[in-house]
Length: 131
Image (cartoon, rainbow, N blue to C red; front, side, top):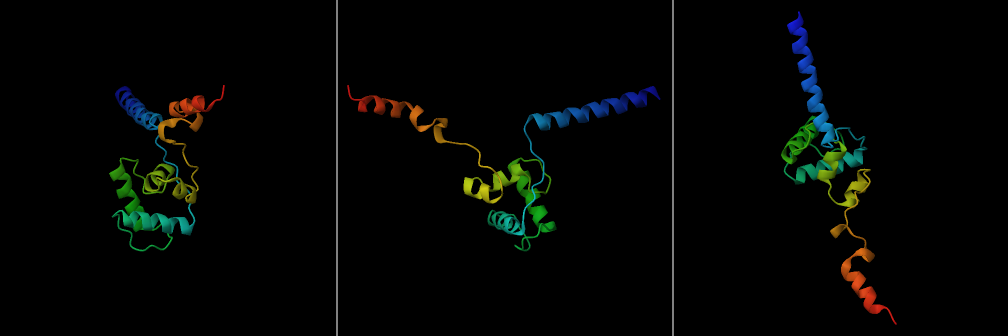
């Protein structure tokens, strides 16, 4: 009896460890509620990237879920078969597409600096100053 309890406790701790690692890695697994227009667009994107969708019809059906699973696996994402935020961001990398799917665009300026803070622009500003 004591040995079974110990084994069960170890199994629970190992499971919690894996869940904790997934959360720490920032894996987002929540599903997004998409309307039929958004699902159709997702189906078109999946199909254009070689993930077979039987019908582009705006319905989250079995073939669409299978295409999502294949895409998620190929991208190294958590495989759920559902269009979660992480999957949609990978499918639609540009900000206009992300907005279409109801995602707020992530900030990603080239170089990570605002216009005024860039060293070349500061030098130009200094040159343009009149003394």
